[in-house]
Image 1 (cartoon, rainbow over the protein chains, first blue to last red):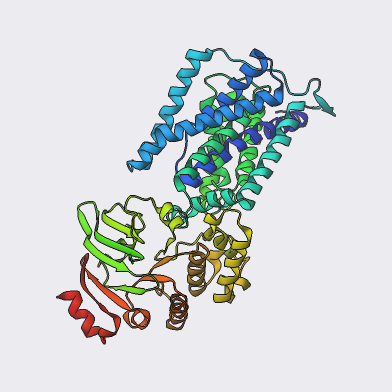
Image 2 (image 1 turned 135 degrees about the vertical axis):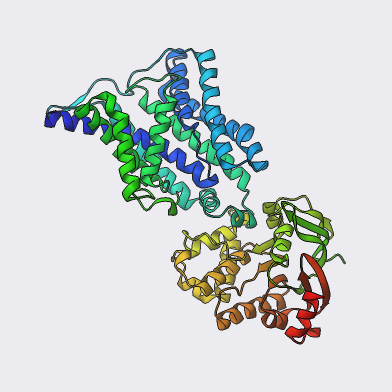
Length: 295
Length: 236
């Protein structure tokens, strides 16, 4: 049986990884709410964020802020390209939704292979953003990177909430999520909004990848696990608002971490999926009101 | 002088079913035109085809300019605004947000947006009282007022409405149609699709009778005196 300290430590670690899941989950929600598409390539944006940041930070020795900004921008461009090259043509030809979702899976596999061919298959990481640490509170150790994840996560959720509620384009995106025909009838360019949703979602995924890489590592193969965890977090949160998705991520992260301590690492995903099942049994629309509430 | 909108040979189908056979129709500047017809006549498809919400064939011109290939949001920018059947509100947003989205094309022209708010609140004072209320929580009549108000925020030159009286108490429906009459008297071109003939005929100058996807008659509104007259056109 794990000690109380081990459990508290796992809780802290779980919050950190959970925030990252939450950011990925928000990415899922942004695209889903704007288009009804579940983008299974979401994990790719996380992977690319870490890979690009590694190249700029370690390879080109750029300062952290610049490396992060360029990486996020590049991944956003990848998101736009995915929308324009894959999603839009299928959308225009009225492809069934399951075909579009399958195409996003194909995109994930394709980009994985491109990354192996161009950047290699070796895992890589870079130092935490603030050197030193960890911070010791009693016997519980908190790495400084966790504070970066917390701070950046809170900042991004705050900015997203402002964007969706206080800006013209943000409101238009919410309108598209509720009624695309009505939005178009008011002059809102729904197609451009879908492109924007992919850019935004990719940028969020990239930020998550940049933040998590120093705590773990990045490689071509992390996209699947992160994508699945982000998807589960989005479902637990109800595919709704950004704070709900973040809360879903934190819950999942904490449960996974506790499961590792109590049952061992091999049971991490079993427990995560069990939690998902329980949530869906009692709250079929997610824990936070669910699919009715948007962005 | 070219018509406000002119539709020539407009047709649309759902799969192999022709919902709208080639239809000709026009609305002049400042004119109130009503399209009447039974269920399944193609009335909704007609408006959806004009707005490009469904794929269609044929020619549509607006003030003499061919707009057949334009997408829905570009038509809105020209001032062709449609209020959908069922209102098409953003139900989880407030009344204020719905109205603000109506003025999407104005961008950051704050004075114009404020002016339109005043116009809409002048016509529907209840919307001012309910500004912070979530749209889905309002009564059917208030929701219809919001749908019309939001369309007015877009600064329409042609306002198309798909059965705005549907599901409303007769008094509320009459109130909304009276407002449409007032807007028309101020010069707004209106194309109204309705099943409730008596209400719609009070306002319209001309009427198209649609049945089985085709125009059965085009005549001045005052020539239709009774349901018997209409039924004659529906089934001839």
